[in-house]
Image (cartoon, rainbow, N blue to C red):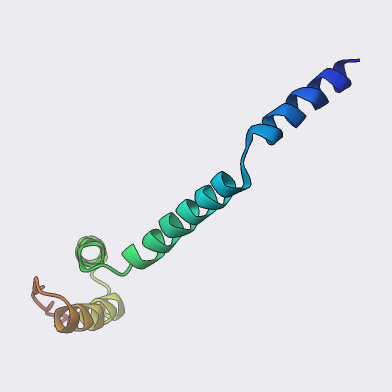
Length: 90
């Protein structure tokens, strides 16, 4: 008896959902996912990530890590406006 009532409630809910509305919600979620994927390559986020890596390097002072950061800084400075000073891995 309980299952029949629950089944009828879900059936009524799904009858109220229009296919057009379902497609619009799907397109909305697709647009949000696309925006999230493409925002990961923004200069601001890359700038913050490089600054975080510089802070980590200052704690460890590993030369290989420094060289990796310098390569990232070079790429960043070529593609983005706020220039980051290149580290001296000396």
